Image (cartoon, rainbow, N blue to C red):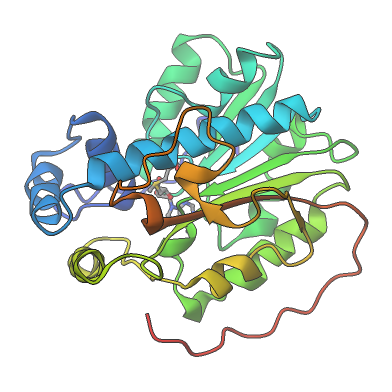
Length: 291
Ligand SMILES: C[S@@+](CC[C@H](N)C(=O)[O-])C[C@H]1O[C@@H](n2cnc3c(N)ncnc32)[C@H](O)[C@@H]1O
């Protein structure tokens, strides 16, 4: 499939998607009016959502800079979202201008806008956007654009940031991440975040649960996971310590962390590295756990 040969699917503007809602939380700009109406209901349940999204995005930027500082020159950003300030290629290229980036998203607006941006800035020679699904890792890795831009003999920075909550246990996301990990070259890095309520106070727990319940009506229902379930995504990776598995705000922060920030404990984050070749690891089916 050529870079601009998107699948002929229709956008359902009336049914919000995680990409469009997140874009609204970050920027205040709705893609469709229905997104704004829906997001405003979510805000009523979870007033610090904008702050939460900003923290998540800031973690992504720090993780990219960290990986570039460790020699990564190519990124695979799955669930990249609608482009907004601080896209992976912009962050990486501020340090190493010819860093290659392959974006993947299943959201048609995200794909279309990313393609528009990359074409406008004339960077499609070293950047690509693939319409793809995390649940089909082989299709992503075999995509002509991934084959064109990613050198599987060199470390790759794999980003799956705030995407796994949209993959239900039924789809076995741990197995999906393990399949990607097994195909990554040794030395590659993996960064991820996951909304969490483990460490939130009771009021915040209720707010997150209420917001997650609202997402059942979207194209991307939310699956909450605890710290253990999040940490298991890093099986086969060596988690970078310090800080290990922590909150997005606390992952190698570049400014003092506000410990009283209610959004702080609600997003687990980590970066790991595949330090040695692995025999394909059998990942067990998802344990049944309460959300
Ligand atoms: C909350 S946004 C995160 C965007 C970006 N990664 C960030 O952290 O700033 C979640 C993104 O994951 C995408 N997504 C959800 N499920 C996906 C799947 N199965 N395959 C690919 N993308 C997916 C959504 O379309 C959306 O763009």
